[in-house]
Length: 483
Image 1 (tube, helix red, strand yellow):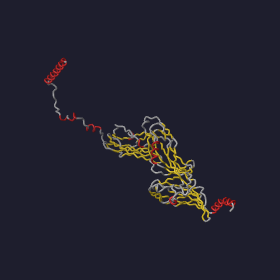
Image 2: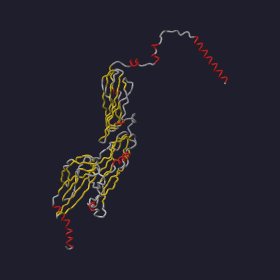
Image 3: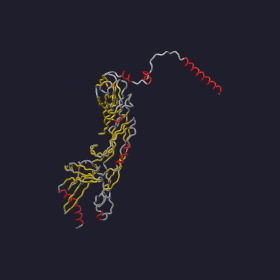
């Protein structure tokens, strides 16, 4: 074959491959990873197109107990017995978060505009394998051939990641005592092609939490225990959001809440420029992401006599009275329960005035605090026991009033009891006086003689007393003069 003929064949060979591949019908399929994976292995879902190229893939599902960790793509062309076939695929990796059995429900994906359905499967996550047993960078043919097929160094490409770390707040300004919800999350775009993975997450989160917790605020930590991806849309772009830390803060004073920039170290893989069966196809490196500094302005409460001690939040009153009709000396119970959104643990009991014909004893306290949907809410109940001393009709609103500041309306409000209690029976004031112990002097009155005696006499006793006093004075004078 002449050189000219050889050049012509080489020139036409790619065109022949293309036409041969195009002549065959495209086949779209979804391939699932194995039924069993180790805790340090990844489960995969691959969208594959035979005899064509992948132009667009949408709908990689979320798997309970797994976190999306990045995507990879590959293309291959084969010639077998003169028949040309090509395969193009995109693989989504899923990192297990804990051991157990998980269900990948049936799902539908869109590949090159064509809907493809998968029946799903059950996946079992076992304990971690030793590194010697699993090395993604090991040459699978190295043990067979005794050494690598090629001594040429592999070249790796650093793909630009489409991901970021951010601290977000649900408010940019709050009143003193008002809660602001703070969230730290890592966002990975669905268009991201750079493989990423978390590393030493618990240790990093512990350090981040200390940096993000202002010293001038009360913290209610939401305690995130599972890393579950959440689909969010930012600027018309889909992201998988991994919430790493969340808390609500209630400022003690008028100092602004400052959340500094914090780092998060991630594993980022460089991918091989030319994929090969005889060498590793990615290289592990580290990438540190940083948040932007965030400041939440804290505003003072409006003027009020109770400004320094009043609670802040959105609250309602729920009350309960054991009996609306009692007799004097008979006890009853009354619950003053505050329900709503705010710093529940800091709520103080209402100040009950004393000396108004009903004696109230210090209350039993029960509280419930819930943290959900970026809110801290719950209830705090004060259960009082009272004993009326005088008959009559009593409005408990004269005893139980609780002032708070509502930040949503920007004004103070008061929770006042609407219960009325009817007291019957006799007054207990005289009974208490007669039954009181007046001391040993009054107790001995009944034992003494009540016969009248004359006040005269007793002259001898007075004479002896005067003699003793005079003798004392003389002795004192003699002692002083001798000195």
